[in-house]
Length: 554
Image (cartoon, rainbow, N blue to C red; front, top):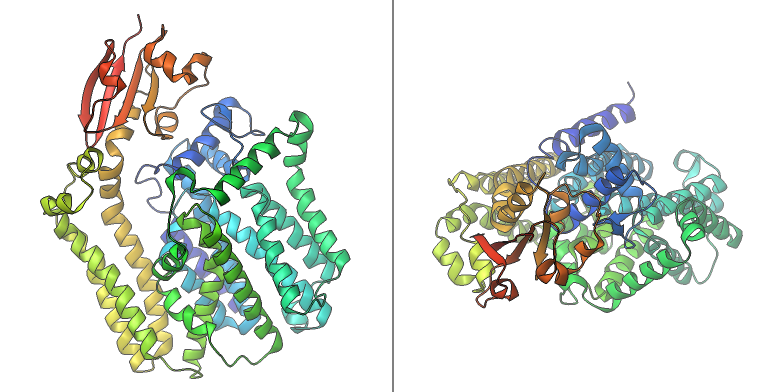
């Protein structure tokens, strides 16, 4: 068995070991996870895999590719959390193997392995492969597309040699375009915008010298359009411009306003990447400075990754909606930079300096303190409640009966041991041992943290509401949130297609001649709401910040 195949199988095994077990161990989280799973479920319920629906109404914000993946697995394994999250676990395995192969082409076997491990063992990149959100596939498709354009330019300019870029220019161009089309089918034309900005910036910095020909760029665009128009074009042909109009309105809203309350300060994504991509972020920062890189094509790839990183970071810092996963495409260049630093540490080209040491200690210390201290703080909920927002909903959440044993501190202790060993080995110049231990140890830390905490977090934040929805399964009732939005009433009631259009009319549900009972849920508040003043709406209970009502049909 050759080296490439052996380590590919090792990474497949590692990915399967870390990403697949316990995917269904906790409910999907509002909003995105439940939103996307519900789109896939409604495809199955309606038997309509061409259109995207939510609450059995057209949903124009997202194209269908990811929902197709979810619905395929739901048909195989049932409509559940495991099936909703499994596509991203598979994406994680593909990503690890792809990064190893690309890294091996660029800098050799050791670099490829470090890149894959850096992605596996950094917090947010790892977590996203255990989630049910769209971005892992979206980011992977964009990155593969860009890499193929880079390889096409190298083939044209005779960089890298036949071992690095064995295919023809046109093969790379067309393959890159097709994969970009898949990205557009995953999350929309913003994929083309990002790649276009990266290519345009490189062209500008290259003093307007063509790295691929204008004809090749047109062919790249045509290939991306052809693969995405399989769905977009047919929908526009059948139903007119509604899809495009609604999607453009949604995109403009994201750029110009903090959609759905997702606000943040301009440096939001810098903090997210520093803390969220730990420990790769600590080493990645060093690669923004000067490094000794031997070959021209290696220096060019670093240049491309710098452009990709800054384009994504600046673009989504401008966007008014601040959501964690908006900057997640930065994970590819950031883990690449980290791997460059790690390789040069092993080759004694640079030193493990005080900044790296301080970064591991400070950011790692934040994780250790948070994870080790949280279970003990949770047992003094009076302190937590005094420090938290004093509104009735937050205080009600904190009243959730969640058992804390103290063993939940174990992941923090584990991480403290890992960081201590790693710092000792880096100081002793045992670089290879330190790096592998750090990232494998971090992957174990993330897994342990999920095991100990995710169920308890769900218990505090949404368990009462989701159990309310689950109890409505099979009942001939309407279920409606009041004063807030959730996708739980659709997925966790296993809602069936709407037969009475009045169901969408809140005023009818509150005051009209309803044909079946209505179950309402709202956030707790200090002041009474309309639900409390209507004579035929009866409060049925209250739990953990959620208040439940029933209006009986007459």
